[in-house]
Length: 266
Length: 311
Image (tube, rainbow over all chains, first blue to last red; front, side, top):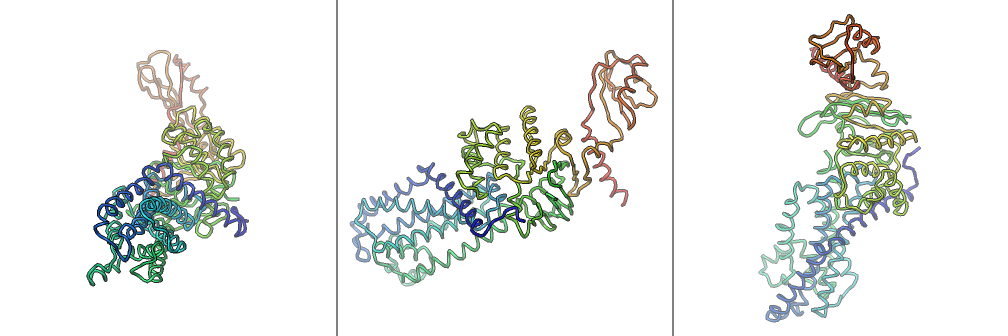
């Protein structure tokens, strides 16, 4: 006789309750400190639009047939998604490690994949929330409207999933609060800025175009740009394939780390 | 039924330190069980392995018949854990900590709220339910850890030093509540440095030293093994030298204090009679040390000298 009985349906319901508890906890966490989590991206984006769009953008002219301010909207929105999905998971999971309240989850019957899904969903919730706020700001400065809602939304969510997983792996290996800011500063920021947020890679010499193709962020920005503007430097299928492969690899690695208790169990 | 069976459990940390060296332990359902041992003996590691907070190196753990390796979810569902160190999100309100924990165990939110209210009231924390964790006193945090561990109604409650740093009044209240839980059917295992706590609460005791179980026995049977018990006697009048009492070991600590050893078969009445016969009046008396503490030290000494003799 099992002490934790039930059919697969009951088991599935328990997993759902655990997942939704984690998600609710994460949403409450970043909502309570919205001045630190949601507002900064809105203000930064506004500054980008004012400086690069209004003041400098008029002198740049058009890019890929679009006004420069319109051209940078997808990249700026996706940059906000990337940064926020990543930082939500890295700071939340590292804090739970640092203050040891991750043990609340480790002693519970929740399987590792449900715990991972809960944290990733929290990161996606913040990434998408901030992304939507940035899009609302963008609509104030531009006339951009989605070319394809489906592609726009799916790239939004998939990018958030990918970088939430990245944040989780960073948190697993982090041994101090300094460690959780190293990757965003020295890896994420260069990848994002060089990922075609502010320019089309067709402007680059051939060698640098080739180098740019090694940057996964480029594929996400271009897929999202297609969703919003209907233009891209990269074939759309290739972009989705790259995102899917990265999610599969980082997801498998995250799950393995959690199952083995790396960084959280002795 | 066995609540917990641990077989040949070993844990070697990355540093090479072997915290558990083949521990075998069985705890019966419904027992109130104490795990005693000096610092670094392996108590917390043993609890860590059972509760999935520490990865074992080898061995087997079963909780109510469920194997930790093959049925971890079933094992965890049976267990409630009160760790030694505070492990809270200090910025969460008290009630949310308990409700979230219920959620992690798959208890729907409405029921989780009802259970949180029940246990917070039981542990006298309901009035502080909206306070952030960081604003609670040490005693309140200890009680909250118990509420959190009970919210999914575990069959086996494991407490690692539950009353460390708690004042006497709260400690007694916690003891009463633990006794009540045990009487209602919850099996309880606790580690403690307060041997009085183990003597007062627990029916069975295991002594662990250097990662090995040195002894497991019924508490009363263990105490019956004591060869001698020491008492400190405060005298009504000063003495210049220690009195000579045939059959009793009596030492003079200072002018008004004696230490007397009572061996098995000797009674306090006999000691007082012998003292009165030499004109000595006792004003007050106390145990020199807790009986269990004395027994524990004897057993640890025996355990340590055995390998040396063998060598």
